[in-house]
Image (cartoon, rainbow, N blue to C red; front, top):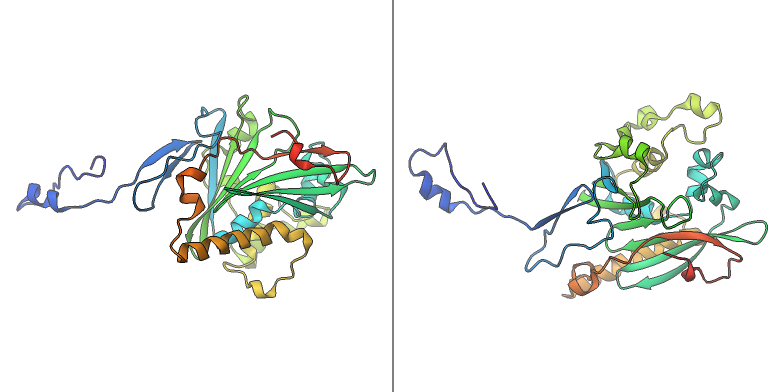
Length: 311
């Protein structure tokens, strides 16, 4: 088979050429970027490929890894865009770190501010320190399942992360991670450990009876979660919720505003789709992603304008 056309049917004895012409094979346009093959599965004329800033980078500046989880895809998206959990769930990894991301320890209390955009929204998670200064981490959410995560340090030459929660069915998803740097090669140690790996970070023990591989001895010695990899903490938290969370049992607070906003955006899109409108993410005119970059930094006050932070 080539380009969606069947070239020969070697096991057809009666009329191989005639049978070959009757076979209709569905084929879809594809493009490669950051170590992944991207394809358009919709109907009609496909829009241009997504023009994220990492799409044309060489292999030493952009790579991908991922894994499959027994979880609804929405749980994956919510984990991606939520910033309030960082200082709580990942506290052991951040306790002795000098990274800007570790500065989230200044406060577990998060104030959110938002900017709605044609592609989704920008979510600024603001943490006020004892001295009144503010740490800001600005996540970019792009409909329907992209999350661009602020870098771990401040500066325009930092490695950046994109997380994509791709649904398989109602109870499974693939969580793709893309690490990239537009200025220089990505961190060589992390690239060696994770580039093109499946499942990334070795995956999780998908068994509640085994506590998803949690090391209780590690916890007894002071580790908060019993896991040694920061992404495994995220994956286990997500999978241990069950494949589809009963959201009627939730208690959401102001620190969950990014999740609330996500659900509102998705519900609005569903209603528009039912009414016959094309989703924003499928409209060619709204797919210029080249200038979208997650950012972060420090401000003198939580009341300062976070939008002026360099992207």
